[in-house]
Image (cartoon, rainbow, N blue to C red; front, side, top):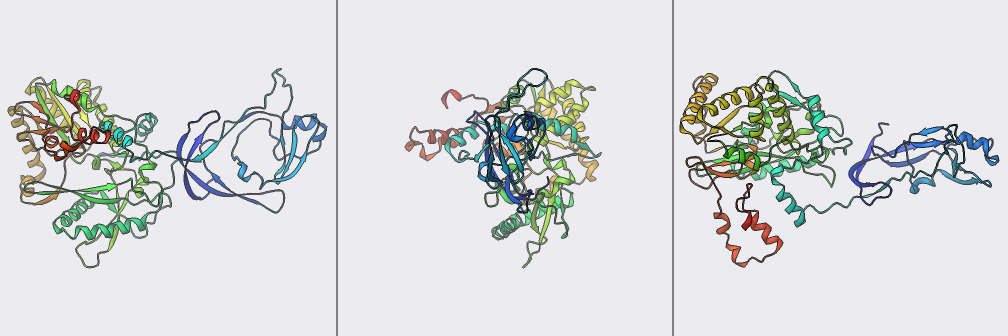
Length: 553
């Protein structure tokens, strides 16, 4: 009906005969129903996908002709057979339509007089030609109540999220989302373009410009206390703008109501011995006055990644190991033009001036921070890699089983096989717009070959100028580690080790190492009680996806 939405409410919709229901955000609209008289009725209605299945066996015309007290009455609706339900008037608004006048007979239905005309209510005994009796006792119930969702901050909820760490907030049972994705993905010759997986229906996005503006002013005040971080923060956004990752929205680009949303953002700063690394993090879960967030409106998508344990087990089966990641993988995938206004954010033209001007930017690529981002990346990589299935099925299977979000964890039985895998992965991923980089191996011979090839590629792209030499003189730089390394606390505190999906790997000895130093140095160990909270606090510090020390944790 395309009615304007007044607001939205969180409801639990329960079917008849059940105590369980479906939780969802529903739009609320106002509508005016024309009556037979001059006093039209205004109602407030909740929009749901389906009210009920069509009611069966309707025979009002037969009832009017068979029962004397109904003869000659004009009915509000005299449909026969099957009838769809478009509007269901609840008991709270029913009496706005009922006039209180009633015609009853010795048997059969009663005729209720409403402002829309006569409505029949009651049993009808009528024999249809097929000799089956019409049964009009079907019950159609739509019970709505305000949702009472569990508090996400409860300890039980935190424990559940902790044990589901490796799913990276991807929820199963959304296979149809992947089917839609496969039909809508496009390739423009340089990179893939995807649509955001919007829930159907989803609550209307609130217009949160004012809230985003107040957050921005507060953010600038904090960043000005550390000019180095502010300079790099601005440089990251400018670099993204120059690279086409984000684009500027013109002042007259107001956008459609319900389709425009502004992302909050803030820096995550990691201090190393010699450098300070800055990552700009976007928050798609922020809400305005209890309204829905952007993530509330998007499907997370089905889990397409291998589990961490499976990837690590296969990794340990290779004599020659090969580890790498994809550079800024999320930002290498374009977002369709129609979805970009939901990915707006605010920044300044010159944050160092006395009175900086606020500018509106929006993402043209997949932003890390959306609940659907891991799914969009995994699905895009899966779609691209499978293009080589007829040509090289062994490579496709191996690479798909070696990918975890934007990390490559693989290897082969010898250096020759591992180098071939590196060459194929590097070149074929590049054809989809992805740059595989930062390769590490336990084989010094393989590393020499990879480093030589990387130098040749770098020289051909940059005319012999080394990017690494430029970055080495900076003290504040952009944090560009992979998503997986960031999510699994990649900073290695052990000497001569790399992190592989969050686990320390000594590449020289080719051993996985569990670092319990942080746990053992916890000063509160002596005063802890064996409570659920304290057990969860200590075990959460031990990252052991393979379960090596599960018997004692």
